[in-house]
Every structure is written in C-alpha cells, then in structure tokens.
Image 1: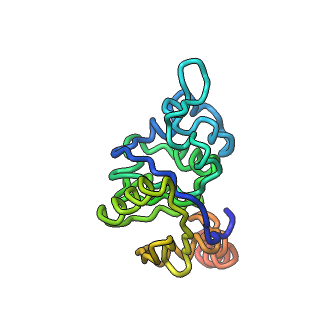
Image 2: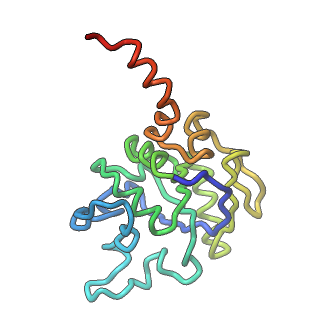
Length: 196
C-alpha cells in the first residue's frame, strides 16, 4: 500500500442510502484472483444500461465527476456481504475517500486495509455537502488526513479517526505489513521459546 497523501478532488454525490457490496461490485465479477481490474465493474448495474452503454443519468458518469477521488454517500454504506472486492473496486476506479454518516463495520475496516479513507460525519454535515452539490453542481474539497480536516469553499471541517488507523494509512501499512516490521523480533521470540 502507498502512504496516504492529501486528496484534492470534487465530491461525487451518491444520494442513495444502504448501498450494499453487491451494488458496489456485483457477484458475477468476483472470479478474479488479483486485486486490480475491478474498477471497471464498480456500480455496474447503475453505471451501465442493458446495451452496455454508460447510463448518462448515473452521477459518476457525468462529465464533471470524471476522475473524482471523493465519494459522498448516505447511511450504512458498504452493507451486505463482507467482500473485500468492494474497496478494491472503489480504489481501482479512483476513489481514495468516502464520506458518509455511517458504514457497515466490515466494509469500514476493509477500506483501511486497502488504502481508502472512510470518513464518518454527522448526518447534518453530510446533508450540507449534498445541498452544496445541488446548489453549485459540484463541491471541490481537499481532504487532509494528517490535519483531520476537509476543506471546501465553506471552510474547514474536522473529522475524527482512530489514531492507529490514521497512522497506518499515513505510512501505507495494512495489518500484514505492520506485522512484518517486527520480523526480527518475532523470529527471536520464536527461537527462544521453541520446545524440543
């Protein structure tokens, strides 16, 4: 995983509650064994029409949101089955930040393990972002993990995050790479505790 950097982007306002992992990455695309290549299938049933053409009414397909890296969502984002493919698809598509009032627990933790910053904000603040998007057609934002703030034209808004999760994202570490930092100490411990 790469160390997390400041993200400056438009917010894609996905105004749908309870977006489950099967909407994020439908089950028929879970046959791949590598982590890459899932972005093309993200929100597949919403992004594409029956003839395979892009759905012009789906928010992420609108020209002003192409290459956006911040997804604005509603309550309970990432609910449903606990497939790790969901954050893989979001990241591969280009999203590095998801802002929502709440997330499904497993999805939330999977985001941190895969280099995505999920930010929990109050429903009122999320509503405010959606209103800003409606009024101005888009919201430009800078998400600064180190300062724990989102900067828009309306000012800076602080967000909370677990200190350990923040540190791992800033250093580009998942649980495995964090453990591997202590390979020598683990080997020494095992060597001193081997029973013959």
